[in-house]
Image 1 (cartoon, each protein chain N blue to C red):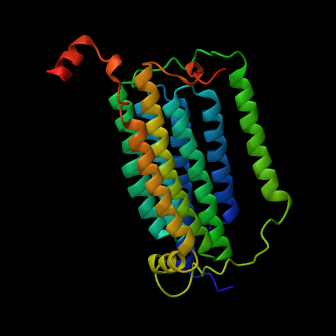
Image 2: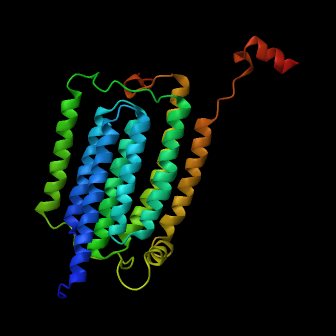
Image 3: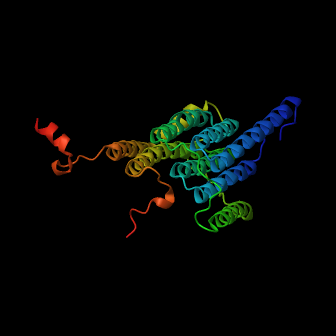
Length: 199
Length: 101
């Protein structure tokens, strides 16, 4: 254990402050996603949570993932959500107080509490980690985070990496197929469209 | 290691719980989807935390793959949602019983 110098103590304090602020941002955003009536507000609250998670990533030496988190999640996925919300025009407010299924909400809250208690208990009752290493490399040590993560992904995890490319192709093809309007056969066309087709 | 990993794990358990509750109580399909994203992010945070606690970059590599899968999932999911909304204007999860026999 190295002696606690004033500089080290200040770093510790800064780590705690960053953790606390980001945790509050994450939790406020998460509650906002669930509680906003307007889907657009929910999407913006989601951005807040994602940004807070990126800050926690930086606080844990995952610099590359923090950047990717902001670029991919906040920059692409949430924008996709907003596009769909605004294209479909479903941005009207939902009546959140109306409960279609009686007793569903208390049951859901109870289930959520059970999940939470279970997670925390499971984390506390036993030592789940064997401490064995995956052989992927270390987080600390010489070199920057991007280099180490890149080396790991392109050597130890090369096959999974290649498989994700297949997955992305499937997703693109699936999205195109789903978004395409189905071709209508001739007998489904309206009279005007049939006239146009024969003209 | 200044902030103990347990704090991060409790934070992500909270976010996971909030996401799960949101998935159960909201009826707007898009908001339900966002709650799934919340849960995915909670798990990503645990991966990064364990990567730091065990000093093993494998956890960060796992997050990398989760990000890819989440992006693919959102693309296909939103495609399905657009296809459903094209059929019927006001689709909450309760109204979707096309598959009902």
